Length: 112
Length: 110
Image (cartoon, rainbow over all chains, first blue to last red; front, side):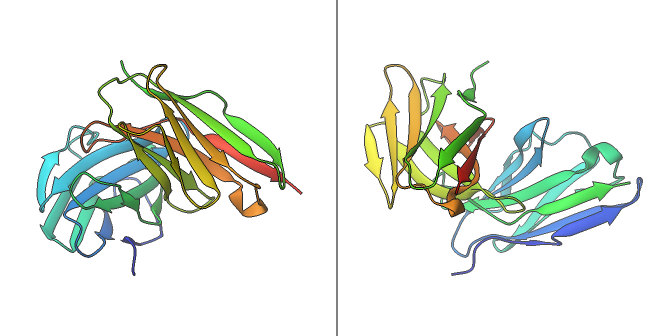
């Protein structure tokens, strides 16, 4: 079975540019999560979708971050404009209801 | 605030020995706990979980123990192998929101 799929795996961009991260959750899962991982702050929940609807976006750092889930098999996390402090590994995870979350391989973002 | 914390940030284990990774939690409302393993360059990988109505759960070479009295969670790995070298996170939740500990780095010595 395919796990959570994320793209790109690595992204290097310059400050001010728009960045779009993509996620395909496990088929049949109805909950999707975006996390950010840094050495300083560990794993932080950014946003949680249930049945394609954003339920909790309290972790989204600021208005530069936005996330969408147009259908059950696709979600995007967008940063516009990007800043160096946004450099981190971004993970997408999915689950069935509030059960075990399964993580994707992550996108390593570097903003120069 | 309430948080999940790990007692030891690093653990060095001789190959073949058993490993024990500890985790303290303080949210008494948490009813579901998960251990994840994260290898370098990869996402957290589910290892084993336990619900609050259980004290112990066993998987393949792994056992999770839950002591609700002292709010303590542990992961035991039997016959540790080089492939077990990774960062291990405990996570707790009372709903959908997982709270992760800081992580314990396990290094297996040959």
